[in-house]
Image (cartoon, rainbow over all chains, first blue to last red; front, side, top):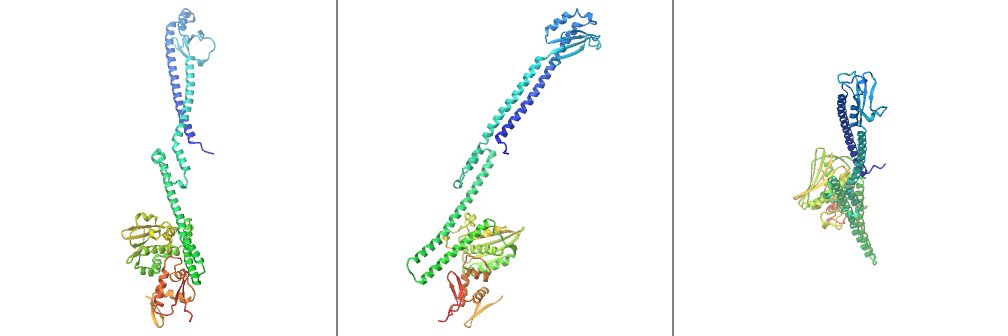
Length: 437
Length: 91
């Protein structure tokens, strides 16, 4: 079942609260008035009792009564709401101004002996008609119920109005969210114009938009880069093939053209293979086949592999420290080879590349550092982006790598539960890999 | 440390262990064109395309020792495919 709307809930709550409060107030007021009336009636009855005792003083037998009755009747005539019954010491009714049965609820009564000290003698019973008090109380109860109903209705309407009003910013937020598409990710909510309760939501909403915008921009750039990276070798292939076919040529020329095409195709195939591997990593399908490795030995094997290249470039290679890690040998070699290749390309002749292994606090740290000009800080976060090349002059497919090396390295490190980052300052750049040991 | 060397036309040639391993591979599979990826895997146990020209550099160094100053050249480049060691058929 669909839950009640917030407006309905607020209205009902408001109405229930105000009804309860006004009902309580009404009941209290009603009881107070009733108590007040009871007290008033008693005062009146006591006053009349004193007057009648005075008029009837000394009456001891029924025979004494008639001479007093005119004064008593006169007094009763002055107070039409009063009735009197006199019961003699013999238990007989000597006088009753209100004969017959009557509704006991319509009267308040007071019974007392004629002589305050003679409880067994003649007794007087006074009846006071309280019908007008009862009417008043009944009218007031009706008014109270009316008040309860009206206040509930009024606060329900108020609640509905308040709810609508305070939910309007939320509605506007919904409208903005509904209007957002891939091309309007720059839209933001005005955080300062939101009520305090919604400011946090607006902030979270904006932060989400910012992340989406960033991810979308990277994805767009990636697609653009793919197209760009593929276009150059493809147009090379096309042009070469068209030129060679434009007229009859010597066998050697055909062979040369095919060789050249082969190299271009190999580069393309490598790039596509790298991209597939990255896509696999993105979907969490890059599963390392872990085995316990002596990282020192692994690094030495890699340094051996790179030794000739480094010697040609006039760069010294060095490894320090030792550590053990359960990792996929092939993937790890590939990741480190990319880092070494990268370091070699940016280390000037006479420079140095140093790999350092340390473990502390349950984490294994591998640093690949090289001397050379620092990488500008604004480029650091983008280094691991696909097709990103720190040096713009390197664009246009000049290198063997299409700028996927560091992205691949990061994917491999992450597949091993590790993290990689780059720090660069005055003449020393280092890539820091950290793995949970 | 292990010393590696070979001999051509009676001249002793000092080799690094890697050069030795590379020459051994080429000799064992004489006449067969060996792709760069296979050479990297066999000599250095690197089973991936590193995208570097490490194999080219290694071949160039080996050639400088084996073929420079000798005739005929033994190590040949097959463009786009790899390298082959073969003795050219006598004319």
